Structure formats: C-alpha cells, structure tokens
Image 1 (cartoon, rainbow, N blue to C red):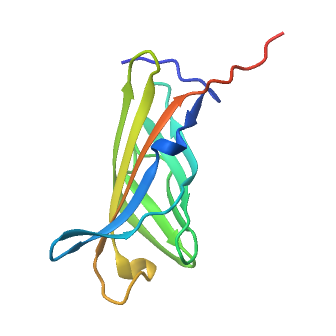
Image 2 (cartoon, one colour):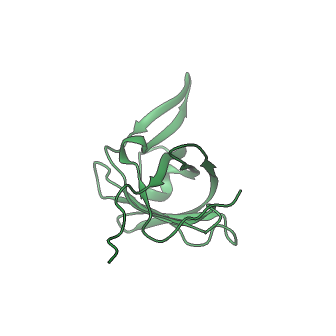
Length: 144
C-alpha cells in the first residue's frame, strides 16, 4: 500500500492513545499502571511503516522513557526510569487504515523484568503495551 505521508502532515490522536503496564497474576493479567498521558513522537517512513519512536510515560515515580531508533535493523527498545535502563525486544504493528479519513494504527509491546527498572520487590515480567493512532492533520500549511 502506498501513501503520501509528508513531514508535519500527521498528528498523534491523543484520545485514541493508551498505554498500560501489566504483569501476570494468578487470575490472569494484572494492571500495574495506566499512565494518564503519553508524550513523544513516532517516526514513520514514507510507506507508513514505523521507523522508531521516543515516548515518555509519567509514572508515580520518575518518568519512564521508551525509545527505539531503527526498528528495521534492531527490533529492540530502551526503557529508562531514573538512572536505571533496560534493553528489551519490542513488537510493532503499524498499519495504514484507508477510508475517507485515513489513519495509521500503531501497537507497540515490550516485555521486561520489573527488577531491571526497580519496579516492585519481587522480580516478575512486566508487559508495556501502547495503542495509538496517527491521523492527517486538519491544519493545512499556509500558501501564498
């Protein structure tokens, strides 16, 4: 599928963006934290594939930074919380959704050990998942 994504022509839809940190419990997934907002950027290639991202999620303690620079060559992301950091695999789903108001749907997921970032007293696996949409900006550049 081809598209004409140009610089500055797309924007993150905040009301369609959600991040969740979960862990496995006896009764299935257990929510650890759902940040109230996500700040940052997605980097798309002209064919609407995700090249990388740089996201910040406010937690009750320091802000969590989640980033990856070149997903084609290295499907890993860095997570940083305070002075701690961990590198973990990241799965990416990025799809252009056609229609009258086309958008790009993005789903990111990474799993890491809680102890790597100092989250909790018992080491356990934590899943960080983000859903977002990028839509064409309604603001058109001014032309003379």
